[in-house]
Length: 208
Length: 208
DNA sequence: TATTGTGAACCGGTTCACAGCG
DNA sequence: CGCTGTGAACCGGTTCACAATA
Image (cartoon, rainbow over all chains, first blue to last red; front, side, top):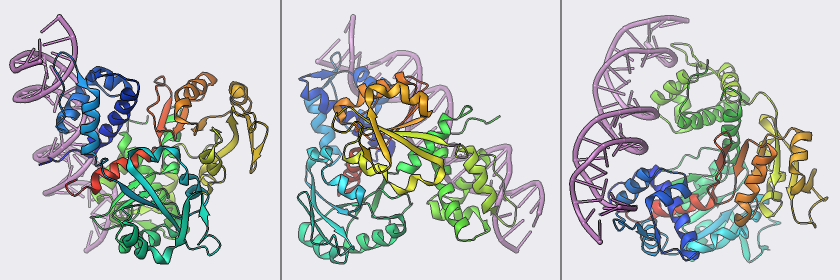
């Protein structure tokens, strides 16, 4: 029974997993909470608490076994099964995401793109075929789409999100600078460049 | 004297600012904490506490004056002055950011790009000229660069960050899936697609 | 009367110190 | 002996109820 894990812990677990993947590729066998924390910029205390939360365990006196811990976190985070992904909005950003190289690992499968611009529908970008947004529900069914990258212009963001929800998509990676209004059973992860920039601006101020 | 504002509050203030900008463009004069909260998906209590933190104030019985509040938040967040921005790494993603339309508002000025690929140095993407990464310090000085978008391949991310820090950049919008190690006086805001996706995967699991 | 502003209570994550154990 | 695992203390943000006020 997976106890409730704080969302901020989930974020950090994602970070640890990345470090572990690197370590495993480098042939490292064991990590201590100290080392893992240094790489992820988190205290060793925090690392241990997080890992207990995740029901992962190490060896006292030696540390955590990289391979085992990596597998445990992968599984906890749901990264052992395939996830079918679509790009909604094939503008500049959507196109750039088509061959963004870091999705390949981790079983995220880019299945298709959507756009409502007739000049794009039917085309392909790289290996990715573009369908008409009005056929969303059909392809969600056909390809078993789980997740959408939302890369439409801001003013279409909410209506596109509504369409996604109606089509049965439950996970949205929201690249538009908006707060989407979605039902509770739909999860939105914001990827907000503009918000990030504004936060930077605040902290760069002399008195920030 | 600006008291210490929690970083999570800063993030929400950025959200309120966005809503306020929209409201002002729609010609709305007043907002209540209730309305502002609904739009930003935050409780009205929270909105009020945050705004007190930000030393912004409203009118009892009526709400907050949109124009005033917008100005107060803009100023608090450091968005009244210009910020000079460079793109470091002119790959697919860097190129897509060149004409990402939502930076234009808010006084963020894209000044130039950097790359170490000779075939890109000297070229322009849109209006953006690309310089050699080894000339970073020179252009930081010359153009008064404040902020860098880091869009290089992962394996170059840390060394590029080091170069940025040495050149005097104090704010980095980190688009690479890595945790950068930087001095305390440098601020990094992560924009991490892959981490976002992994979080989605976790929450989309049946028992997530 | 409607809505802000705030002190107090609450809650939950973080830190700490140390016990547990290989 | 070294490092994990954990109960307890701490701290800070969130929630709440209500007083203040336009």
